[in-house]
Image (tube, helix red, strand yellow):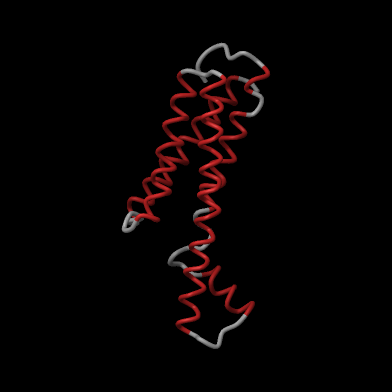
Length: 143
């Protein structure tokens, strides 16, 4: 992967993490412990991105990959939690609702948006693309 593409990926990843973090803060996504998890994961991921960018090595890339894996896992769990909360709310509103209408309403709910945590998955995957093939070639300097 060329140096320019790596730099662009670092920029896109940093921008995505900062934007997602800011959005979570603006929406007060820190009211309970579970809501703080994505903020912590984004902070860890951003820290490892900076570390890997400044000191690329096998160790920093491995730690970065672990952080990206945690971001992906956190996003998947978040989608599940948001979806489950939406299902419970829809069942309270309409106890007789079943199957597809229930799933459809849960997916279309605006609070909490069921698929919003998927952005963490996307950021984690972008980070893994950035780290792809790093061991194959000795880095010549910062990203």
